[in-house]
Length: 299
Length: 165
Image 1 (cartoon, rainbow over the protein chains, first blue to last red):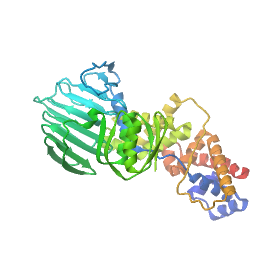
Image 2 (cartoon, rainbow over the protein chains, first blue to last red):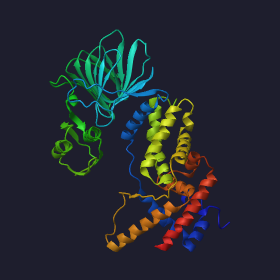
Image 3 (cartoon, each protein chain N blue to C red):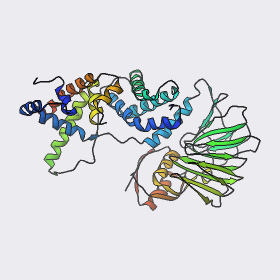
């Protein structure tokens, strides 16, 4: 049989007999198809950023879960929380699960029923996973939050995608973006579990969990995380994470070059250009503000 | 191995999310729509994680994505745009050569965009996502013969681009 059914498809799957190939070559079809294939194979689509898309997905999942629940938008009392912008706090009323999230560019303060206080950094979500009257208080955190936990008889646990933190009445900060986990303890004690290891942090100690390793460090002099005062601070963090944080803080669409460099320093939350300078100048990068929420960083 | 386990679910995401997004892009011609619908399909998978067997997760995702697309997206004319692969060597700097090459790329993009949807999807899943006919058949829930047919017809049409330039 000289002409097989679906013969062009078989050029690709390599199912043609030598005689069939010969025949296609004589008519020039073989060469033309090869050229089309070659040209198509040079086309690519933009890379899909799986890490950030997955973080986003997990957040959307939390929000969509209590479909049946009544959604009440709490109007926040102004409170003494001076510099904090308390907007974007959504409270999904239902017995369980209970979830909270802070929109990009805003910080939310939550008072839990046991008198504990949680302040969610921008773009972060917190979900209550334990039953209403159970003996333990379990939460799931995506992103970053500061906790002031009141002591009572039940255990307080925060799970993140990277590890879990157990508490007995204390003040601490968790930062869990991408695959890195940072825990800062400001008073009392917390136990950090990460990649099968466990360490106990006391006041002014920090756990740095990167790439399966956990390291205890002395935490600086501050008594609260600096982001509560409108600054983001980094110690040896990958430049990519720094830009993702900038994106969340200013609710930007940011493009930046791939880089394996790490960044130590701070940027402020009240002036975008200044923040860009604070990151780009020491790293030898340039930037272009395309419009109020689109910025391109380049080398 | 339940999909309700975060780790299992995450593995599925890392393995298939890009392909699902691309599939939706071939259908819609709009990257934002494609990304949003791919996320929606994964949320649906999570909501139904108890009901879906692990082995069926992939075809479940493609079916859901297809349905979401039918229900949410108004059917516009598709205009696909691609980037050039960075591996591509510039072996000739002659401006005329580059111009012809770009023209050829544009003609090809247009011809691919104008293919009937079913042929366009099969052709691009094979060429861009490097999937074998058998995999495509499985994901789209069609026979191997149907995949070959669509591939053949796509190439038959695209051959004409070559003649024009």
